[in-house]
Length: 531
Image (cartoon, rainbow, N blue to C red; front, side, top):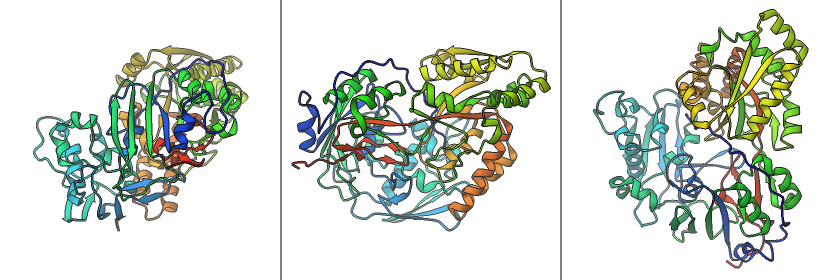
């Protein structure tokens, strides 16, 4: 599945002014709120959208949506809005809908509700942000023609069988479907939403454990538990969550330290050391599974300029352990695999010798290649972690006579050149996954819309198809690893480091994740509450 290439904002570190103890500071406002069952969470940036795929308001959307499936902390799939999702061939899937579910306005949710929602989102002319998520469903291309109007308005791969059952047929075997059904693009909508999706987004009729009760996009959003909800509710879930808008992560962090706000998801790397001192183990929790990885990518249209030996040499002068330990002070981990530890196919050292720090070996490769030029290393100028990594790589390169020149570029300019296939060197890129599957990390490399590498690999494509068609996770993982080996051998994408997600929070809260991605509405209140 296609996912968004993400950029982590640069931050400056401000000194912590107070330590957080108990359930909020005596001078703060969060302690009494938590004890009454309510929490306040940081919402970074104006709430431009709530429903649909990953966006600044998607944490709010997660609290409002019961998907057909859900993913737990370990990455296991559970049934949620579905009683079962099954297939004998990984192509045609039978979905049994959980009975008795309703939207927050009382509208019943049936098999037809899900099918109508999926069809509406998949039809290109409706211009839904989640449209891309249905590209694997049979009939998607007919609803999204390259030219002209669609000749039909429903996916041929969706069929209502009865009130509680529908089938979903993919265009080829795809055992990722149970994962996909847990993501926001596959949330259902009532018929009333189809008339004006933009207005609906401001006041969605929800089917999940919470309902939106207040929304001021530049200030806050408030969600409260539904009393009529019959589905799964996270352990220790709050009765009320206020998502408070912040535009500066430093200010948000200070408010958590002072006890004025309870949860900050994904503390920026530059604040982790401060957080360890100010919050300690009870107020700063690292998520065990990684879902963010930073790479160096090499567009294949530059292969003649930077042949494979040069790319291998570049990888071997990167001291991944030193970068993670000395530059990022524990907020990252060295990466030597295309995949993170949140997926079952992960191997810690899939990259082998080319991801090892070997300046002497790199020098031999360069001498053999005869390369004497400069390698411009491009990165987003707004990201200080990219800048630090680029400088460290450049300094190591100089020691063997290789000139690697760090070149920061404004976000928009770098994005435009990437999309136009006009880069003049490798670039540093951060990637995040929608769900904990190897496909998000391996198959995604060959989707040109993701990295714009103009990269094809017949062996890897064959292994990806076999992985998606596999009858068991063990068989699938064998094929994912074979595909990963083939891609790594081409040196078009080189692992650098994983960003560790740290959650800053009040001491009597425990954060929870979905396969490595922290979800605020799953935050557990561990101290005694009055509700």
